[in-house]
Image (cartoon, one colour):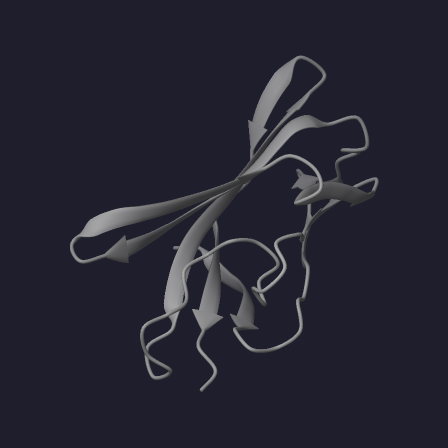
Length: 119
């Protein structure tokens, strides 16, 4: 099972998500990475609802070993995800980041993001 990496509340000011990349416990230099995308999946009415965030300005490299996801104004997550239907039931997304570096396509370990509705 993946670990919860962050909780974002609709109604707050936009907050970026940072993801630090490690390989065998050592920071991986992603400064030359390309084709970066974040894929988010959640269960919705018995089927998967998928959100994919790709490319700049939504996805950028902020450190030699970190990605930042920001961009779409109006969502506290910084990218376009649906508003949860209830304040009492946050949407939980299973997420992975993919990127191309040195002739190889990498996939990160999965992680989770909770998206919460603010009244």
